[in-house]
Length: 332
Image (cartoon, rainbow, N blue to C red; front, side, top):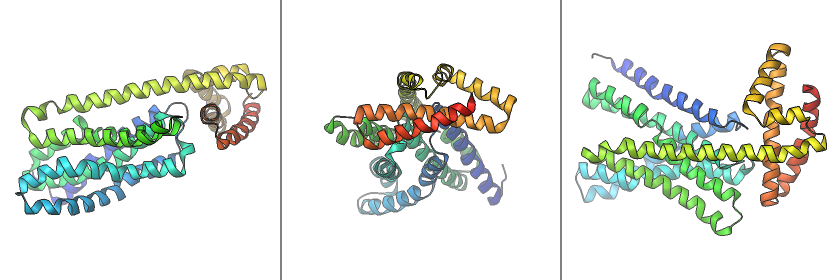
């Protein structure tokens, strides 16, 4: 295959960007009941794609320098991939999650949110890393190896960085909602360690080749399946909170019984929004979307107050209740 450098650049960019956007859309879709702010998800993606890549390159070069004194190029590359890259990359990626945890923790409503934010950071990192890999492989090994690399890094291992960093996000989210002081301190560390170990296992297999490389899809996708199980558990937990904490809002007059029933059902929410779209137009559809998001948010904040007794959650509960009363009247 004869390709000009400009075509290789463009095709590599497309091959890195399109899967990342598709995977990001799927990750966003999993957040059923209360979508995270689009600007914050975009910011986490950009952090993974730009600052974390730059920081990882600088830190890896500095930490790899001493290895130049004790080994050859192949040994140095292998050691850097297994020993240096995992902790460095998972640390710089996790900085965005730590910032959310410290300064915007009200946006973390459940363990699912920690996974979502972590996965978005990882997807941004994967997109840029893949692009650089594609360019380098074409220059070094030609078009055939380039095509194989695109398939492996975007399809077979396309969710790897999201998987790794979602472990860090999960640890921070567990810390956010734990009453146990020990768990609050150990969960973020355990999450980061899980991310580093998963990353190191993958890099070990990829660097070693042979049979160990062949089992990588099983180990990597095994991690993805485990995260999916946690996501399903988190969604069921969120559904239970909505059912429990919105029930009393019918008694308070915040919601009607019909609105409560719809708010507890994804199908009911979607059906009502589509009905309003065709009957009253886009403005009513958007108002209903906001209404159901606020329903979920109210349930979460009530749960947070019961669990953690946060004054902030109590104030938000009162504010959300008033907003819902107004939105509820408009949608009747």
